Length: 601
Image (cartoon, rainbow, N blue to C red; front, side, top):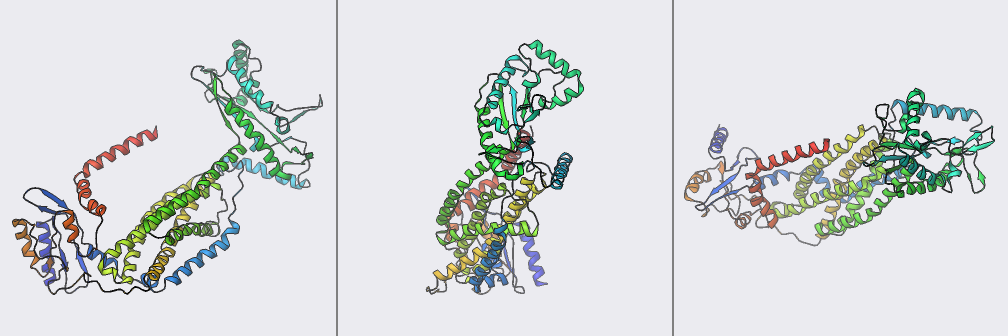
C-alpha cells in the first residue's frame, strides 16, 4: 500500500509538473524506475530548455552481468581462438570452391522466361544430338553461328534529321559498316554461307542492316518504293520490323531508330590450326574474337556523323568491359583499406585494433560463402558479388566505431571504470544492440534484391546479405575478445585503485547521488519552492542542474569529462531540433515528395 501510494503521488506530481523528471527508489525492489521528461528551467532574464536523461540508472541497468559478458571477461583468449577456429574451418571449406561462374549469353537473361526456356531446350537438344553423333562431328570453318559473337550497331537520328530512311543517312550507315567489314580480322570471324552454285563463300549474308534492306537508296523515291513493297508483303515486313523502332509502319514511315545485326561464326583457323568446332578450344577462339570486337567497338565509337548517333553492343565485349571496370574498381580496394585503417587508427588510437578489424572483413568472405554455397546451395557466383567488398568495408568500420565509442564512453563512468566485468557487460549489451539494428536493416535491403529475375543481381543481394551477417557475427565475437585481451595486456602491471567518485553511492536515506548539491542557488525562488518538498521525500528525489553547458558538465559526478561536441549536441543542437521539429518534418516530407515525383518521371 505504501509503494502504491508513493507511486500514485509520483504520477500526480508528474502530471502537475511534466517538465521535470523524478527518480523513484523503491525499498522493496532492487531496480529503479526512471521517468524522463524535458527539463525547463526559468530564469529572470530568459528561458533555457535543457534535456537530460537519468544516465546513471541506464548505465547500471545496461551493466548487468550475463553469461556472455562473463565468458568474454574471463576467457577472452578462448573466445578469440574459437572465433578464429570457426572462420578458419569456413576458409578451408570455402576457398577451393570460391570460383567465379563463367559469364555467357545467359548471364543477364531471365531464366524462367518462356523464350529463354525454349532456347535452352533447343540448345540442350542440339548438344544431345551432337553427343549422339560421336561427340560433335567436325563442322565447316565459320559456319556455326555463335550467339555471344553477334554484334549490334544501333542508330539514333539526330533531331535535325528526323528520319533514318534518307539517302544521306543510308550512305552514312553504309560507310560505317564498310569500315567494320574492312577490318583485317572480319573475314576470319564472319559467319559464312556457301554458294554451292558458284562454289564460293559469302561472308556478309547474315548481316541484317537498313543498308541491305534498302540496297537502292540513291534517291528518296527509290527508298519510298522499296518501303511500299515491304509493307505490302506481310512476311517480309514482320522479318524486318525488329530492325526498326516499334512504331515503324505505313502510318509512320520515318523511323528515328534502327539497328544493324552482324553475325559471326566458328570454328576458326588460328595460327595454322583449324578447329573442328567451337567448343574444342573455346577460350582461344573467344580471345581472338574479343580482340577483333574491341576494335569494332572503337570504330563505332569514333565514327562521327552529322545525321545520327551510334551505340554498340556485343556480349563478349560487354563481359570484357565489365570485368575491366570491376578490376579497375578493385584497384581502389587497397586505397580504401589503407584509408579506413588510417582513420580507425586515429579514432581508436591503436594500431592493432584497426588491423584486426580489416582482417575480420577478409574473414567474413569465406564465412559468408560457406553459408551461400553449402547451406543455401547457390552455385552462381560472379564478379558482381565481389563488389560487396566496398559495402562491407563501410559497414565493418561503422560497427567497430560503434563498439569503440561505447568502450570509450564506459570508461567515463566511475561505476564501470573500476569493474572490468561490468564494463564489458555494459559495452557488449549497448554496442551489440546498436549494431544489430543497423545490420538487420542493411541485411533486409540487400535480401530484397533476391527477388530479381536477373541472376547476377539476385546472387549479389543474397551473398551481400550473408556477408553482412558474417561480419556482424565476427564483430560481436572476435573483435570484442581482441579488445579485452588488449586491455588486459596494457593494464597487466597497473594497479587499479578504487575511485572516490564512484557512483551510485549511498549516503543514507534518502538515497542521493554523491556530489549532487542539496541546494542549487541558480534556481529562482518559485521553482525552488516547488522542488523542495520533493527533495525531502524518501520516495522521490529530484536532481537539479544548472543552465550553462559548463555547469551541466560540472554537475555530472558520474562522468569524468564531457567533450564540447557532446555538450553542444545535448544542449544547443537538441534544443533547436526540438523547437523546429515540425518545420524539419515538413521540409523533409516536401523534399521526399518532390524527389519521388522526379524519380517516377
